Length: 444
Image (cartoon, rainbow, N blue to C red):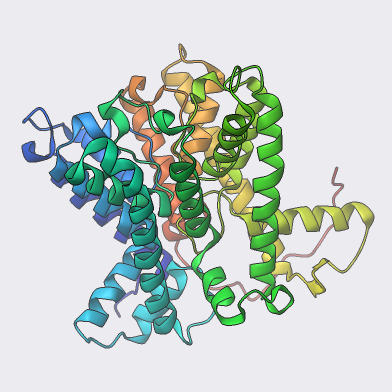
């Protein structure tokens, strides 16, 4: 009897296949500005970072890759951001091919929805919404990039950065002014800042939230619990960190800047840390307090079923509610008049613990291989990788072979989902008919 792969294993293998194809294409001499192959490790690292929508790079995207190479990178970002099953479904629709039950089940797992009914309609909405938002973003960015870079480059840069921002990837082409500079040259540009912030937030709240808002418009009380939690936690994680960044950076990256410029930097720092990876200020120059805050935001990330990574906003909400109820000894683990399922609490704990364990593994391993690196920079890098953020204090390109492979592994786990990756490696076994007896232990 043929053994079927589980949905999680198919998704993991799908991303591996995309990475392999991306690596081979980026190794072509035509993809490199030097006219020679970039080599296996740099190409593989870039392919992983792009397909896992992270943004950590060992080669500057603008100065190291040709337009062909950049086109490969942005294609990997689009596939990785939407999920390869969404792209496969799109082609099936164009070819008018009927999707089978098995493929629909994989699609459900890919976009983190709970219902197989209406999955094709939801997929159409995802594709249409993506095209709409990325097009609007590109048009707005073009008003700034075309005057600065000319019509051809301006349009290409607008499309590239719009897709990269919506997919929360963090790849940029601004290295033409200064390698690895990201968007520091546009730190005071309101249009660029707010366009990118809007794309990052829309891409990061998740496709399921789009669908719910589309159906119920602005009637918050009628939203599903998932949507309410995502919007509430997202709002809190935008407002509170923005205020904190404004306070923490007044004598650091915002020193000597006007009020408006400082507010713009603080808001962008708050938004981009949630898995986007762009930066309008020098990340290495952030105050110690801001770096810790950024690590916290990178670990949380975006929302389920989105282009973002991290443990997700709903995981944070469930753990927070469960912890509060445990401290106050309340039995009804409820929020917004609804009771949370025990399964949600167990899954949230598993996701948070697994991501934390992977980050700690990466930190220890890189410290062992490159003990000369600053421990704070290593922690920042590993959390950025597992959260598929792409922010860095600048150590990525100085990593040796083994640390690069570790960071690539963390990026892959972060995109596929740490728990999903673990499940993909494990065989399903039937539950034993006899269960062990329970016994109480002391906790805390």
